[in-house]
Image (cartoon, rainbow, N blue to C red; front, side, top):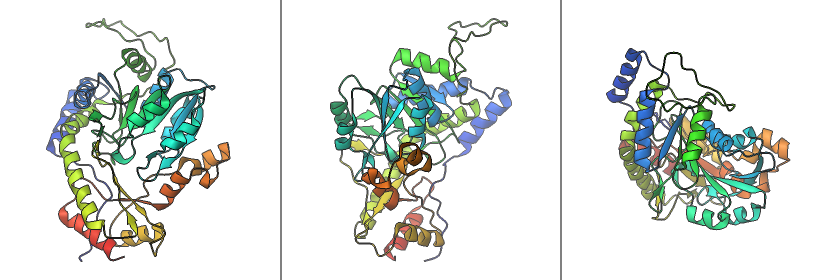
Length: 377
């Protein structure tokens, strides 16, 4: 095989994004403005949700949601132990009490049995993470949580994902999405909060903009200045990013359909490699495939996960671990005295996961090259 260079992810732009950015630069208005509003409206329409509020990252989106819900140090918020660290960080930003729960390696998502055991009278919210684009089974979460615990979605990976015919971003009280370059659609950096709760949306809009009061006047006098009744943040998205998002959201269905096609291709070609465990899920789920993550079968593999990843890199194939086990990060293991096997599912996933290249610029030759390199190990 001729050696190829295959990135794990790559943004997919064309002249439309470029033209939109040029228009914004030429307009002279580059901070949050009409392009951000247009992106918000398109995002709401796509995901069938009432309110979409653009932010400068998914992390700040989560922070806004938790701050708007007024949690304090007595309140327990449950977070999966296998996720990007910002899911847990956002809880500590609000001084609420972090409670980690294990994950199920079959889905990489929250473990329902462990969730049952972690709920107490102090549990105020559960942050579910739709990892790699696969939604959490919301029916099971709601059955366990009951009516008094708020469900918040970390939908960083899940633009366009669905379960039981409902979009990510509509499954809980509020959600936060990411538009980092490794996501299905991107604005460079950036995020989006979604909710159908009007009061919550208004609080988040105010907090996003320094805590400034929101004027309903169509014509603003030149001497108008907002009043500030809350301590807020500068978590706004720029119109440069918004103009890119406007074109990216129009392509989301196409991107997801292509990723599903190639994820199925991976599955069909890798199924006979006995040292690999492939992703699987039922027909109720529409996966957006932000990442195609496999697990190493330790009992059947001659080599360690890291050895295999190093070998693939030498072949020009870039991979990454799926994500990390939060309880194994030094800042959390020291703060809470966590041990690696306190959360065996998260420990297993961190140790054995490999995200293979999957993006909308890859060709069949690229996928075949990755597959053949894996078969020859």
